[in-house]
Length: 390
Image 1 (cartoon, rainbow, N blue to C red):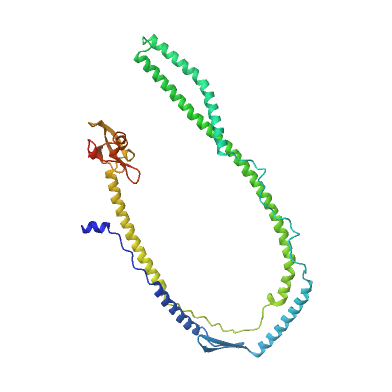
Image 2 (image 1 turned 135 degrees about the vertical axis):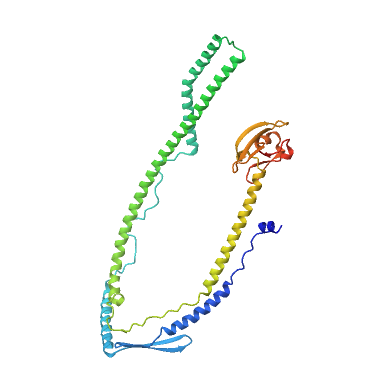
């Protein structure tokens, strides 16, 4: 029993990782790592051009003091004077800027939506169905006018042959021959009806395709017109914005935003930065959680597969639906008149003797039920026959 219990026992999910604790530990480790890395990356730097001195102010605060050698300090002062001259020139340009309020009133009107009032109207499904029915009727009637005379003549010819053969009217042979001919005629008419439906549907589809194709073409034309109007407006707006922004760009250049970069010498000593990686505490907790979840999913999938296997076996045992059987052969009848067949299930070569649920339902509905998949099952205890393996 323990084996069976283990099969049906669902797996237990793993305990949740302590992400909060891992996050706190990771945060503390990150802070300490940042402090160590910061201290290691703040050396005092000396070169022939300048020097940088670092002072620890406490509470993770540092001060850097930078000073140039005397000859390079003189170059810096000269460059400041040049920048002042640029700013003076930019100030003179300000008087030439446009004074009017920015407005788009001079641009072409913004294009609206596509005008659909003149587009080809699409037929409704009622129109399509009505058209298809008219075509079907015309096609069938024209064909019937051609077929009926020949069918009537075939009846006359058959009656003549039967009489000449000594088979008078009213006899069983005479009636059977005429019935067989009329059945052939009915088959011809049913085929004609099907052909008429196909013809009507094909012409209706073609009618709909022509209408939708024309409407698509018209919509494309409308979209192209609106797009061209939008491109014209965009070009006008671009030119207008350029006329407004060009003076501002020149003033920005002169005011120092795009001025020549300083050329004074700075520290020539390249001090490589030191990088320290904190311990991956939180990442480790995440990976452990992912591993536990993956293991749990595997257990759940295995459990589902076992349940599916049991379900398939139970379904196969109780299902007598004809749709699930193959190689069906009639064998005999039971005392109550039920047809007995030899068959195989679609998923097995094993042969069985039994009934078809669809036939039993017509005779004894109480013995037939359906499973959750919609397949019919037969309760053989209500019948005078048992289902057996061959």
